[in-house]
Image (cartoon, rainbow, N blue to C red; front, top):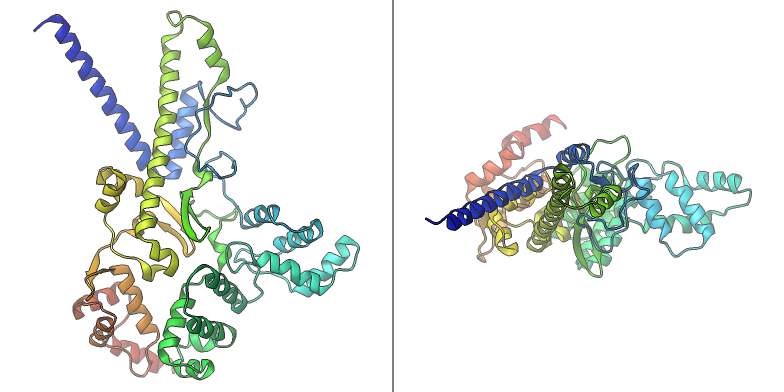
Length: 456
C-alpha cells in the first residue's frame, strides 16, 4: 500500500471519528432537559472564554456577528436566562401592552391584573377595586368603567382569567371554545346552564337534577359534562409564579389564524455569540502565530452553537409532527388522543426513532389543557369497529366519564362498560376494561355501590 493511500485512509478514519464525536455531542444535547442544558451551558461558558451569553456582563463591545441559537421568527426577544420564569402577571401585562385601548383603560386593567391571584381569579370584588382606584387616581371611577376594564382583562389568555367565581371562569372558557371550535350549539347551551346553575348537581353526579334543570336528555348532559371536564378551573396555574418550582415547558402552543401552532419557548433558548475582543485578536494576528488553544476554543464555540441550533430545530420538528398527528387533542383534550409511535414521527421528519426518543426525553409542552410531557402523546391503541385506532388514554377517559355519570344506586359493571364502549365503536375485551379501570384506581361496581351507601 502506498504512503499516500495510507495517509488518505488515516485522514478518512480521523474525519469519521471526528464526525462520530460531533454526532454524539449533538445527540447528548438533544437528550438533555432544559435544566441539564443550563448546567452544560454554564460549564461551557466557564471553560471557553470565546463564548458568551448575550445580555451578560461582557455585553459592551461584543461582536455584532452573533451565532444565535434557534428562535421562532415572530417571537419577541426574551431574557436569555434559561431558568427565568414568567409570572402570570407578567404574561397579562405583556398582552395589555399590545391591546388597542386608551391609556385610561390600560391603567384600570393594569390595576385589575395586580389583583389577580395565583389561580387566575380576582381576589377583591369589583366595587372594592373601583373604590380603591378612585382614591388612587383622585377621580371618580364608575362601576361601568370597571366592568369594561374587566371585560378587556377577561379577553386575555389564558381563557377564564379574571373571573369572580368558578361559574364565571368556566363560562368564559366556554365562550372562547365556541369561537375557536365547532361545538354543537345544543351541547354548548346545556353546558352553560350547568355552569350557571347546576355545578352542585354536577359534583354530586345528580343526572336527574341536571336533566330537569337543562330540560334535555341524558346524552346531552353527558356531552356537556365532557365539554366542562375539558375546562380549567384554575387557569392561572398554567403559568409559573416566581416562587413556583414547576417544569418549564420547552414548547408552547397557540391558536392563531384559525388553527393551532407550536413553537419553541423563547425562555429556554440561550442567545450565544463569540466574544468580540478575542475574535478581533484572532483576525489581527497571523494564524501561524495564534495560540493553538485559542483557535481550538473558537472552533469548539462555533460547533457548540451549531449543535445547539440543531437541538432546537429537531425539537421543533418533532413537536410540529406531534401536533399534526394529535391535532384532535388540542380541540378535545385527552379524549382526542390517538395511538402514536416514535416510528411515525421519525418517518415524517426523516430521522431515526432513537433521535425522536431523545428529543422527547424530559421535554414538556404547554397546551390549552395544561403542561404535558411530550412522551404523553405516545400511547398504544385499540381497534375500533370502523378500523381506526383509539388510544388507551382516550379509552380510559371514556371509562372514567361513564363511571362519573353512572347512577350511584346502580353502578356500571365492567361488562356494561364494555357494552357502552362497543356502542361507540370501540371493540375491547372486558378484562381490558377492568385493567384500565384498575389502572385509574377506580373500585369495582360492587365496591362503588357500597361506598355510595356508606356516604348516604
